Length: 142
Image: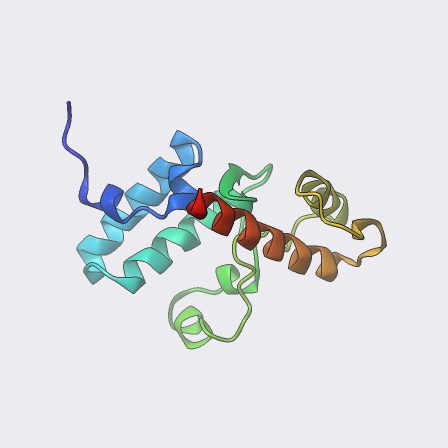
């Protein structure tokens, strides 16, 4: 049996519950970031930024997006601009905030978000993020 790569030990549980393609995306970016920046938070942030261009968080795992691209204002930033704004609340935690309202509504329906039919797009993003957080916490507890 092949030995486990170092990044597998650091792989977040939400990615472990995701497709092999999501895991490969995170692992490859994380490994490259570790080589460039060293082990730690920056390598993890870089891996998540890469993941969020092709995947979105749905409940306790990541699913492939229909169209590639940044998922929120934070993911759209690059370099020094991204580092300067990383703590200003622009990240939506893996929710594709640039998706259509219809797509967000569908995700909210799948996650059984109450009151979704009367929510604005921004409210759907926030409700999905909260539902994702609850699903992830429940999966970790089980």
